Image 1: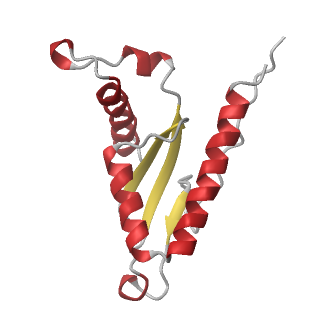
Image 2 (image 1 turned 180 degrees about the horizontal axis):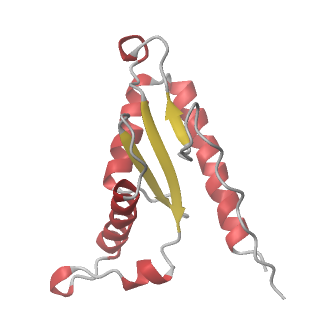
Length: 142
């Protein structure tokens, strides 16, 4: 029989009771770092799940890329609508298990690339790629 695994709850954010994955607090200020204080919530979804497969486009359009983007955007919109109240800007980061990003996530990564050194940005991408690979392995365990 297959065992069900449950992910542990996300840790509480710095000085808050929210469970967002990434919080940026710049003690030096955004002028010095290029990063403003903000909260980010990372979500990794399968494009093969029931909700993704139920996504439809108008006018019989079945382009797989547009279908995937519409589903990823709907996940991001849901995160925004159901986030706890906060004075900080909030950005949902939505990726598929294969690494596909929705439009707003692409903009977040572009903004990070502008302010991070190339080595730091590349290390972040490598770590994220490894996390996605681990998530895929867990998804396909027998």
